[in-house]
Image (cartoon, rainbow, N blue to C red; front, top):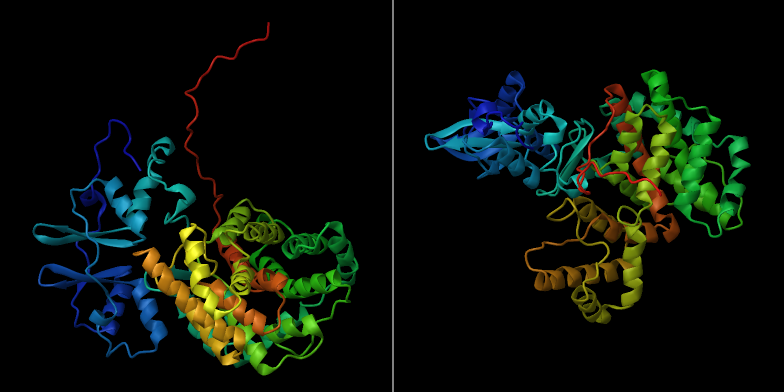
Length: 516
């Protein structure tokens, strides 16, 4: 961000909210949450006399809510972010932007010699950026848009420094532990958890949409045969495109919210069926029709083998599916929203998201983590193998994450799922995990690299009998719910996503020479 030439340089003090809303560390969460709601404030600065000792934001309140603790008894000091980053009121706006954007903060207290004088938020900065000429608004955007806020969402949030993520205010991993996939699916589409009757009706709606139309089923063998080698995601995106074309999906700009939700339910319900049908055909087998009485996760496994899975396997797969429905504005989710912003139909958005996921930097890591275990073969080989890879500068699959700077909560949950399933591969994976974390801490001090979701996802899916080539398509069978929810949200309050690029070529205009 930069100022318009000739204009007065704006400072943080010019745009901050003042006075800041404050609280003490000894106040209850209930008191402060009520104050934030009444004043429509996204954060409260925690002070001791005139000194800033912490900050409590809406995200902290969400984190607290997932704990189940009593808000009238819980103290602010136990849930606030202590010793937050601060900024002086005299600092230029561009420096304030840099402080928030590079460190992922949404609110920063403004402190001068006299103490707290205000608070600055990402919203304040975005308002300033929107009134500047576009050519003067490009200087501080990092490559890959890292930490740049590009939209507002009520679907969920990822808090990388804390190792926490949520779906519509509920801890995602707690939902995986306590709820069915259908109930969490309802939460995504309807914005709240269902009661018993709503849950049953919603589950029935899903079951009614899982079967493939015969004209689509008849064409799947041609999709499988079209490639020299079966690649599950390539076949799946072709099948999804065919499905939505056959059902005559209309551009989001041309249909109402009810029809768009119907499209979202159709695609989200049928993708699991498409995944398994394509896989079985590629192996010379006939597709298995969905079971009319099984839940979505159990039915997924049934369509793979034709056998009703055990409750343990069904629940393990269900926990995995719930844990990966959504995870912030990752590449595929952002792709779905960009496509939706053009007014294209929901099928186009989902196909585009699958295309983004097919890139190895975004999808495919669960099977690669198992490939690593295969390469190590046995525990006594682990240390030498890992050291050789790290010292050669190669990536250890299943470790490290773009967002999380501590344990990936999905990995922690799936590790326990794996332990509950048991087996030699689980014991081996735990031994390798311990070795990798230890060696990375030694050879890459300060990096704080831990297992991410892919490591134990691969172990869990393997123990449940899902073939490796289906690991990423299985991820899609869940993430499509998140993609579709983002399509619904984007379409409900749409604006074409049309960023700008900074030109770095030769200075124009260059003379155009004519041929002799």
